[in-house]
Length: 378
Ligand SMILES: Cc1ncc(COP(=O)(O)O)c(C=O)c1O
Image (cartoon, rainbow, N blue to C red; front, side, top):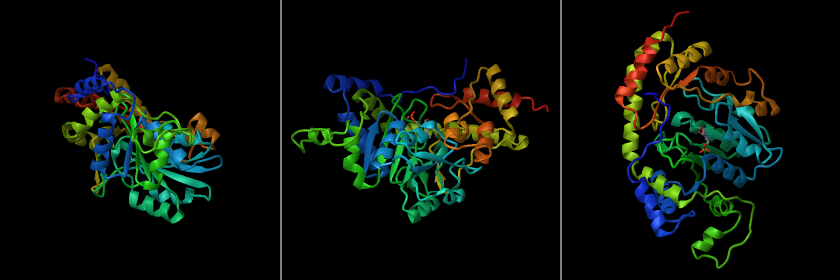
């Protein structure tokens, strides 16, 4: 059987909750299941407000609007990340400024951050790669000294922690993804987390087409009208019901993923050490949420050969982000070879192994055996 890189899994109550939404006759957004998801995220993470969105991309777009990002502004983002991080700000006319990453955690390199700051810098996006926390103390200290808001892109890291603090709780905003590849999913979905209460009211308006419809539905105003720019960023109750089932099952989902991650790590660490392959590094002060398992091959050629070899064993190993600064859009913003050397190197060498909740030990043993069989001839 072909081992896919990802398969979405059910946690048990998804259909029951979706059925309930249908029976209740409330399929548009912000019904009981959306409210339950909001309450669960706010209580667990301790954030001031959680708002479900139709994607992490849209949560980032909302953050860009809330921060009033405009033409000529600069936003510092890691080059090694998903295109939405750049797009959310470019859509508002801003210029992404590409930062390089650390060679250990593959997170934004905080030691190279300050020299990228200019009077035009209006935001810094800290992306917690694989849900392992960025060095937030340093990033927040630098940003704070310059009066620049930090957005945490926590697409990968719901329930991960940095120095005992939940990821998503430290920046002015954070974004979450519930895309089908994530630990918790509703197919396509996301959330905006707000830690600065000053943004709460406007966020609701932007999410509801630029109107105060949320307040109207709560009975706080007797009509709603066009107040601001905005869009339709709220997901339907069907999706919220699906997601609510997954969030309620968080303990069992996370313990399953921990087991899968640890199996790979235990069974591959000697093999990796002997072959110059780097496995994920999780600093002692970070609690990771076991989102993905990747390895860094010694070279691009080896990585490509490993992908091809896994394929012959019907195993789908995949690479990840291409450097944003070298994309055709990135080059239009001035990106060129050598700007972010760690990103360029890591992007060539990174390989992700199949990782999903229903992956069995038999499946994982197959992946490990296939890697062990790989011929490292020159
Ligand atoms: C770091 C990061 N941010 C944002 C996104 C976009 O997420 P979504 O597909 O929910 O819009 C992704 C996608 O995987 C991602 O990896």
